[in-house]
Length: 290
Image (cartoon, rainbow, N blue to C red; front, side, top):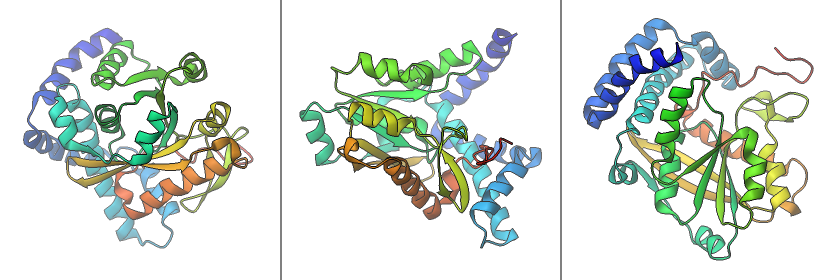
């Protein structure tokens, strides 16, 4: 059944990926209206926005919710476009702001650990980093349950030199690559288990934060880099690396996790639309799991 579903849908995906960008966004606009009619995860999105921005009125929340729907459509179709995207398009559509300190760390043969959120087009951030830096990028991810779509997404995510590893193999892979200069990236704003999380206030809510990146950065003493992914305009982004901690083993417990959370929150407050509001980010509490 999984194979049948894939081979029925794949021709449509290939067709969408083959469209020029102008046509791609016309299709995205059409699907935006379908998404509004469907009410996809509307209650979750409205609740997340309302709790995150308690000073905004109902009209402002509804405006954000609709703007998010429009962006979500763009994000989905931009991700599918990766299937046929050229190296030139990847560089033009997702500019990378290199820094002296990043080049210095690579010359010193220092691997780094990247933390980022589901903000902006994180799928395009990987190719941009791989095409503009001398680091071997390794992205930690959660595999899809359908093996056929998983194979397709793996091909899309690695076409410009990026490597990907399942989250369950992250520690093993980092140990195996310890003698190589790598940049291991975590999208670290997913929901975390209440009993193992670092708890803090994030977007005006009690939030459990995933501590894996902090523990691994300290274990290997890899500098921690925050990757900012900002949308300049429709279909165009800029990637800016920011050095959070060059010597993570010298930090206090929770310091790295808190710094990442506060940095991501700052971006979301600046432009809320491009964060993944349909994710059930706050499904855990300190005392119970919902």
